[in-house]
Image (cartoon, rainbow, N blue to C red; front, side, top):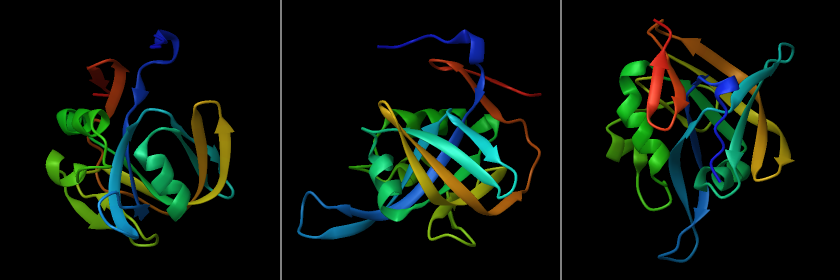
Length: 168
C-alpha cells in the first residue's frame, strides 16, 4: 500500500552506504559486500552524544548488511544526483554493485569500516548503538563517529514518486 503524506513532504533524501558479510547464493560461505540504499526517513536524535537515526525496511538488502556490520554512513547528496539516487532506490544491491552501475564513486571512510559516496556534499560515519523494531522497518540509531561537510550545494529533497525539489 502506498500512503501519500503531503503534510511531512518534502524530505531530504540521502544515500546510506553499508558494508558487511552476507551469505552468497552462488557459493559456500560469506562474502564482503558494499551496498547503498536511498532513504528519506532519517534524523538527528541527540546532541550529546551525537546520535543519528535511519529507518530501513526489514525486507531491504541493506537492513541485513547493517544489522551484521553495525556501521553505516549517511551521505547527503546534491540535487544534481537525482537520477543516480533514483537508480539506487529502485534496484537491490543483492545481485549488483549499485555504486558501479549508478556511476557513483566510492571513497573509504575515515573512522568506520565502510565506504562513503565521493560526490556527497556531507556525510556522517555512524556505529549502530541500538536497533528498534518499528513495524515493517528497523530504526537504526548510530553514534556519529565522524562528520564532514565539504560543499554547500543545493540538497536533494523528495516530494513523492519521481518528484524532487531543492533548497535553492
